[in-house]
Amino acid sequence: MSPLINFFLYALIAMCFMCLYRVIKGPTIADRMVGIDILGILVVGITAIIAMKTNRMFILDIGIAWIILSFIGTLTLAKYLGRNKLNE
Image (cartoon, rainbow, N blue to C red; front, side, top):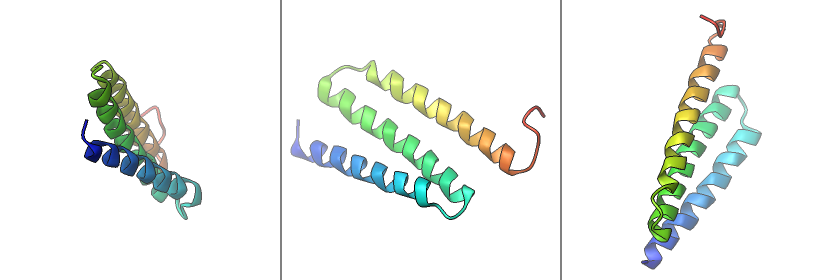
């Protein structure tokens, strides 16, 4: 594999730590929600790079499941922040 792919993997991992900082130190709940959503997207990118490097494509299934759960969590939190009941 190209050293450029390793660079992208390390860059995505560094961005994950930046998102974790935003989730921990975020001044508002909306900032934390955006940080968690971006973290989910970055994890899917990491799983895609790992799947390419190891030539095991079942790892992409983990990324797809992760992004679906992240989407459902974002919708739930947005509904909660909108002051609606969760059973509506």
